[in-house]
Length: 156
Image 1: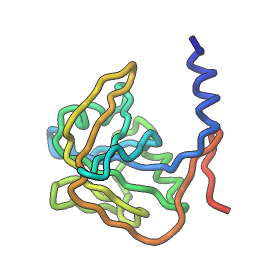
Image 2: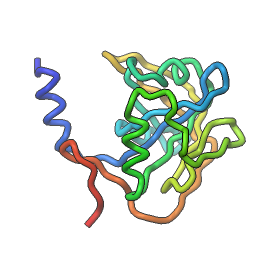
Image 3: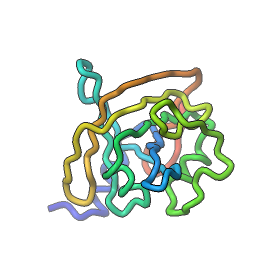
Image 4: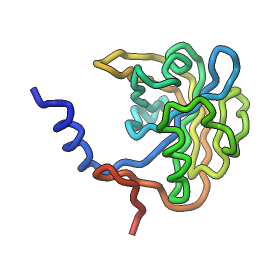
């Protein structure tokens, strides 16, 4: 088998977009984390998946919750991405957001957003694959924030 460090190094050669997955915990507090393991699953019905580390502070809320949002980050959101990649509990302090009709936090100024209902969860290794049925979608303008070889990148 490949060692975890080598696997991470090789995976770093795959450029990804950067998202923040948000929800609310059992006490109604907003919670979220930076996720690059995101992709579409199906167009009909519209479904996506995100992979969530079991050590993440937001994992219990995503494991047990009904709705979540995927906020696609734009090229000006590196600081927000770094903030949500930490274990700090005050991730939303100073971050402009609003609650959606489904009650999940949406980050203001995101490049695009998907509101999802969790329809299945699959535990694989140290992550859970969360499948979401997309119930609402919106997009804005701008360029994406990318991640490649351990660094944030921009198009061009």
